[in-house]
Each structure stands twice: as C-alpha cells, then as structure tokens.
Image (cartoon, rainbow, N blue to C red; front, side):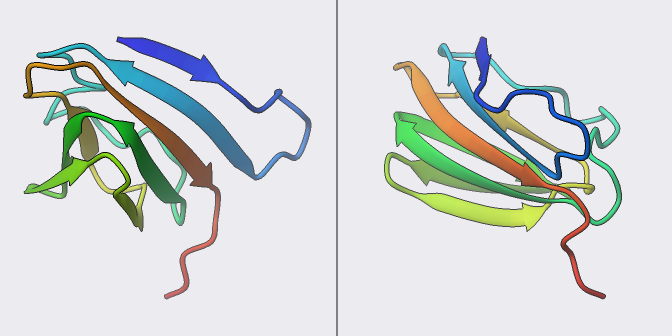
Amino acid sequence: MGFEELTPPLPGQRADVSVHTLVPGAATGGPDDPPIHEPGSRETAVVLAGVIDLFIDGQRHELAGGDSVTFDADLPHHFENNGSDEARFIAVVAAGLRRG
C-alpha cells in the first residue's frame, strides 16, 4: 500500500488531503480497527483508477474510477482492493463538519 500526504502539517489545519495506492489484496485498515478521525469528521474519497471496496459501519460499497463518496469519517471504515489491478484514490478528511 502506498500513501502520500498532500497537505503540509500546519497549526490549526482542519482538512487533510492524501493519495492512497492499493495493490491487489491490500487494505487501508481492518474491519475491527477503531476510527482514526475525530468526532464529527467527514471524509470524501475520489477513485482515480481501479476498483475499491469501502466498508463503513458494517456495509460494503464498491467504487470504480471516477466514483466519489462522502461519509462520516468517525464511523469504523476501511478501503480494500479486491480486484486484480492496482487502485488509487484521493481522500479528503475535514474535521468537525457533521451537523446533528
């Protein structure tokens, strides 16, 4: 798995942009990993190439090149590449944006 941080670590920064590359069989985490984002965070993922599965709060969502999704990032989630080709996606995590 490859991971590239696109935003510099700045004091008070409320959003983070990264690029992830998943080889076949790779994942960004496990189904039982705790959430790594602060409460109220939102994440948007944009698939650049390949096909990935997003598992969020116990549900699977298949995403292909050009697809995007936004979800509550403080819920348990991870991405998997269950295909035979490399997959790449951009993730944007914004802190504290969810409204009750």
